[in-house]
Image 1 (cartoon, rainbow, N blue to C red):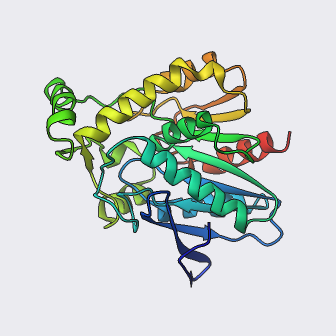
Image 2: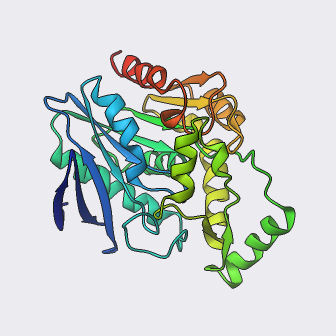
Length: 281
């Protein structure tokens, strides 16, 4: 799908595409001269493509390029902040984005989903609509929460998903849980494109999608790598472990002491090397 607009900003290039329903989606691209492989990254809840600069630079050192999407309701993309009417809207966003990257990049495109984006990526792979995808990567997929969501809020989300689906709640993300690097945490707190919103409908849709992906993980035929930190205080790494047990085509790399964002934490070069090594097999 051709972009509506493209602009060059420093080393990163920004542009937009349209999802299946016409929603305008923003993305950012970090070219790497002579790249043999390009990542198509889908971010986590409340964040945006611009936060993957560290990942893009890390993988560029291994000769790999990166594109990263702003899902609807995030970053510079259209849509109500932290809301989807149904999970398939994010799946359709991802399908359109990966297709666009495939049209732009030379060589193989490897989809990658982080946190909530990891659940989106699992749903998208299972849809069977990433026909050129040979393998994919997940980072701290949000299959099970470790953060304590008050029982009243979880119950309220279930009820209001039907009665008031756009009711917005706080997503309970403590910025201190994303990384052990103070500068990363400070940047997260002050980033104007980071938000703490999640609608009751999105919460219900995520919970259903996470459970469905775990239940049907054994049906995934594509090989995939899961990277996660055993000290993640936001998303329970037990979800990654269960996914790995259920999916014979998966490989799990659990990093000791790492927080929720392996790409933005102390020792991230080790994570970048692990991904590059897996992709070289």
